[in-house]
Length: 107
Image (cartoon, rainbow, N blue to C red):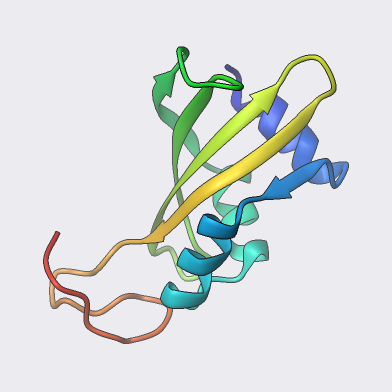
């Protein structure tokens, strides 16, 4: 999988967002624009080629405020669509997130 494929899908609005990703974004108060931004300057740090129905990957990037965001994406090579299945705003060392200021339990 190539990060450029994900970027192109985002730019062309060829994206599906799962209910799970939507719920996580709401919980962490992440906008999808911020998640997309993190992909534009991010990198694939892990690949899951055996995932079904499409191979997926873990992307690390940063928010508008340079806070870490991890997102999991699947990509359909047949039609060029990407699927956002998870997006996570990671807690800072003090337990707060850079986006919402809420504290999260240690993972």
